[in-house]
Picture 1 (cartoon, rainbow, N blue to C red):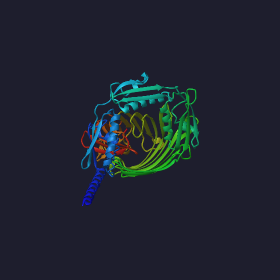
Picture 2 (picture 1 turned 45 degrees about the vertical axis):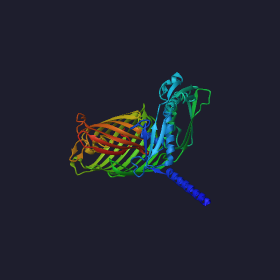
Picture 3 (picture 1 turned 90 degrees about the horizontal axis):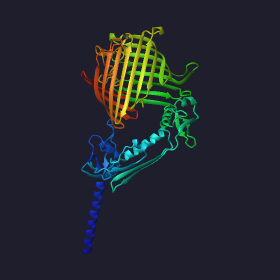
Picture 4 (picture 1 turned 90 degrees about the vertical axis):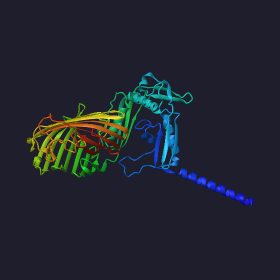
Length: 576
C-alpha cells in the first residue's frame, strides 16, 4: 500500500512538471501584434521618439505605400533583446543609470524607459586648434555620438587640409562611481602633403584625356581627400567601368603624394524599363536601350519609347563627348531625333523634332548652341489653337552653371541658366519669334530642414500659336493648379501666355533620412501681352510628403490656390 502511494505521488509530481513545462513553453512562444514605449519618451521627435526607439530595437514597419506588406509581429523571446538594445542606446546618450523594464497583455508589449540622471563631462583635454570641433564641454551631458562625431570632424579637417597621415589618440574614461567622464584627445598631424603626378593604368577603349577631364585636383595643390573622392565619383559616373582603384602614395620622403588610378571596363550596354503613375501624364511606362561606350571614347547611343494616358513618344540620340576642331578647340556633340503624339485636351500635337547641339565648357560655364527643326501637326476643334501644319526652324543657345550636390535630390547648391531660341523665316521657318527663358534656384540645408527657392522668367517676342506659348501649373510649377491650367482660358481650355514669371519657396523637414514633410508657397504671373509682367499674381500654398526611394524621391503635393479649390500632384524627383 505504501509503495502504491509513493508511486501515485511521483505521478502527480511528474504531471505538475509537465504542466509547468508546457505553460512555460506557451509563455515563451507567445506572439504579440503591437509594441508601445512608455516613460521618458519624446512624443513627436527627439532622441527617444518612437521612430528612433523602433530603429534601436531593429523593428522595421513597411513604408506607408507598401500596402502589400503586413506589420511585424513579436515573439516573447525578443523582449530581452529589446531591453538590452534600449539599455545600450540609453547609455550611448549619457544615461548610464537608465532602467528598462517591460510588461505585456494579450497582444501588446509595453517597454518602460526611465532615463534617470545623465552622466556629465568633468574634464576635456585636447589641442587648442581643434577645440572648435568639440561637440561637448565640461559640465555637459556626455554622448557617445558627440564623441565619435568630434573625432570624425578632426579627421575630416586634417585629411582635407594636407595631413592625410595624421595620428589621433582619443579616449573617453567613464567613471561610474564618481559618475563622470574624462575626455582626452591627442593629435600628431604628420607631414603636410601636396598632390603630385597622376598615373593612369587604363586598359579600356577610352582615351586617357577623357578620363583626366574628370580629375578635379591639380599637381602642386594641397592634398584634399574630398577632391580625390569627387574625382572617383566623376569617373564612376561615366558608367563604363566595372572596377576603379584609386590610391595615394605617402611613402616618399618628400611632401608629394602621387596618385595611382587603375581602371577596368565593365558592361556598357543596358536595357531599361519603367512603369509608374503621375498626375501629369497618368499611368505611364517606357523602355530604353543604352550603349554607354558606342564605338569607344564614351560615345553614347540611346533608343527608346514611352507611352502614357496622354500619348506616346519614340526617340533616339547619339552623343560624342569630344569633337576636335582646329580653331575653336574641342566640343561635345549631341544629335536627338524624336516623334511624339500628345493629347493636351484642347489640341493634339503630332511632333517630329531633330535637334543638333554643340557644347563647350568655358570660363566655368557650360555653353550649348545648335539648330532645331520642328514639324508640328496641330489638331483641334477650338479655333484659338490654330490647327494646321507648322515647320519651325530655329537656332538656340543655352548657358548654365550647376552647383547642386545632386540633380535628383539636392540639399545644397545653386543652379542658373539662360535659354535663347530664335526661329527665323530665313531658315525656312513658318513662324518668326525670339524666346528667352531664365531660371535660378538656390537650396540650403539647415539640418533637419532644407530650404529651397526658384524663379523662372520667360518672354516671347511676337504673337505665336498657343502651342508655342508658356504654360504654367502642375507638379513642377504652381502646385495650386492642375497641369498647364493656370491663366486665361478659351472656353474650358488654357491658352498659356507670352510673358511669364514662376516662383516657388519650399521647406522640407526630414523626420528620417528617407522621409520628409514639406510646406510651400508658389506664385506666378502669365500674360497674353509681349514683355508684360504687370499682371496679377496667381498664388498658392500647400504641403506634401517626400520619400527617398531607390529610383529617386517619391513626391506627393497638395496645393491650394488663394482663389479656392485644390490640386493633388504625384511624381518622382524634387521640384528643385
